[in-house]
Length: 344
Picture 1 (tube, rainbow, N blue to C red):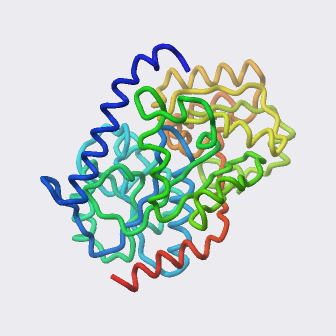
Picture 2: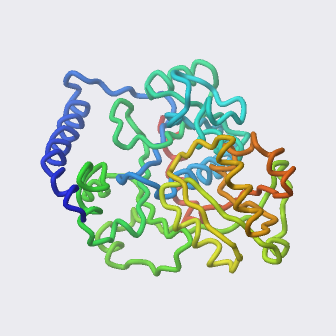
Picture 3: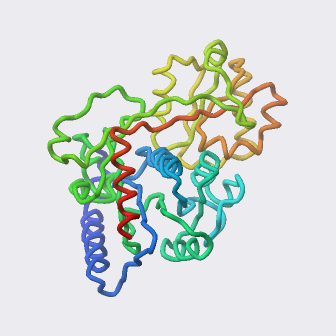
């Protein structure tokens, strides 16, 4: 832990007091009032800043509910989009809607996807437009303006870390809420991602039956038209890999786990906005290493797709990875949600 972070501990104490006061005022209806939706609201988020695999679980839950014949909407803030206010994701314009909402819409076209900074106004406008069975909140465990009917908290190996940064609240640490808060959620998912880590029995004993295990599985590689590129073809080629996500090491582990070769791996900041200069720089890297494929995440692909012709003219084919989150006892989680609908 850096000395600079230690200097921020007084601000962490202030943050702790403020979030507890905010939660108390909302729960007691003092000054602030919670909105109760007539349709079950399922919130999927985390207590840590940075990627715990939330988007993949949102996509998987939405797919499962759709398979059950449910009408589902996903509501996101649309982080780092250029627009403001409420909008339905109607195109793959990541600058207008944000990278994650666009990715979600692309992968689950049968779900309605919306963006709104104001969760209460967003839900009200969604329900004025469509008759739905469920609303999935993309993040928002720390937003108390909406009463959630079912809360799913994603944690990963950082939750078990003894590093002080992973045990302190922001800004000194990486936590949005105290670690003990996980016990108050309806479902806690420990996301192994592509790690081969074993199940932590101590964690099971502490959290109990509300704890579920998840891991990522590779679904395949796809081009801009949605056509699959065979894994054997990729393994026989030279590849350049890049991404702009919170925990790029987890993406790198995919290639190590499936023994997919790459000439270089380029990390960008999370939610990176790519411009023409970035595309030219990637092309230079690809040409330098004589790479045929330029491989990235689905989240990054929606932001470089506008430069697809530049890549093709250079003889480089951009492709994205599709992964799925496999959850332990998925049927029980979905059935718990369906019970909410019967009660409402």
